[in-house]
Image 1 (cartoon, one colour):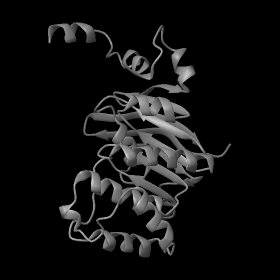
Image 2 (image 1 turned 90 degrees about the vertical axis):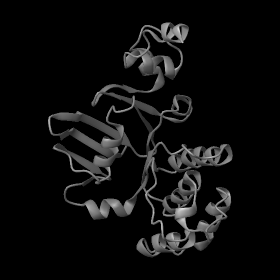
Image 3 (image 1 turned 135 degrees about the vertical axis):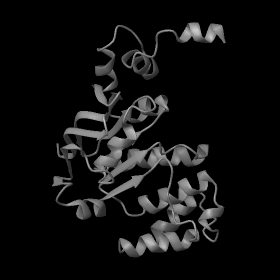
Image 4 (image 1 turned 45 degrees about the horizontal axis):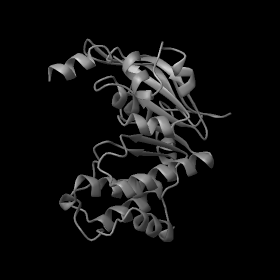
Length: 249
């Protein structure tokens, strides 16, 4: 099976603080990989390094068999990125933004763009981005990424801000694309979604990958816990004391 995302001894320091420590990843074609961790664990920093937005202090990244340090532009043509907080051009209207992306990537499939806009109820393209809600921006950025049919998708908390219908459509599309060979790397705090969607799961804690595998493989690492939530809390050391906190509150 083809390795689409590879990280070798990936480390990022900010001064004396190590946000990510010697991270090693191998993620394959057609795989939906869930990258989980508590707030501040290093998830977003990892995504930024894997997508070329942040240079690692040490280590290397390969995407689609290409070294990020040498082929950053080519890699970015072939991947799609959806951030937790969409950063768009506030002074553009929705249709102007999609036209801009179409020109940058030489996209001429107007029908596909129309179908995606209809699917996600993006019927506000004549509005300025500055006047859009978070959810509206999230759907607009999803359309701008999915219309390109990238080989690798990086999604950082992609369901935040989406209505139930749009979230269901996105989950269905991700499974469909994965069946067609697209690699999906997603972070999420919604553990039920990771449990139902992901082929494998990696858990990062304090900058280190502390567990990785299928749900069944992760279950073998702990004494008990049938749900991903139980496993996550136990592996990150956050399960102990929860009942006591609830009682005190």
